[in-house]
Length: 233
Image (cartoon, rainbow, N blue to C red; front, side):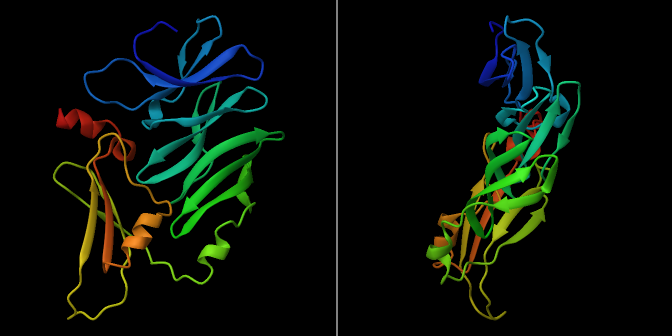
């Protein structure tokens, strides 16, 4: 691969003939990566995920070599998607969660980890053809958190002058309307990273010293795509 650009995360197909990878052509501004394939001899480069407008990660071939599974961030969540070599990208999982991929086996069973506030990361197994059937494999944090009362988390959407939307996670305790309350605010302005909806030990710990703990993703590229980056430039 000699074409200028940023190229990373190569993954060879089961038959050894094709390489999947993520990347982007040179640009004056930051832009999201796409999912590409190329033949092992360097010919036939194809962009499979341009309409998605999100950065692909955890690239994993289907055992039959006809599709590529990957994760992508969107508005604080990270879910699994699949790109068919014949064309088209579709969602495999959905929801306010953080999913990572670890291994794939016949018949398209999948192991991975998932974090959802207020649940710490855990290992899961799911059938990618029927992803609603999720089996939890580990309970490693149950003994640590069994006698703990975790902070409640809310999701609040609000507009701003430079972004289409922002997300905030807050962990309030009950209080009187007349009570003075403290606020701990974490703001990530992007453009190359973002907070997510996964469990955060840091925010849970900070909750003990503040009534409200807010984490805000404002205009991060993984959350909103490259449109905001072009507007800023």
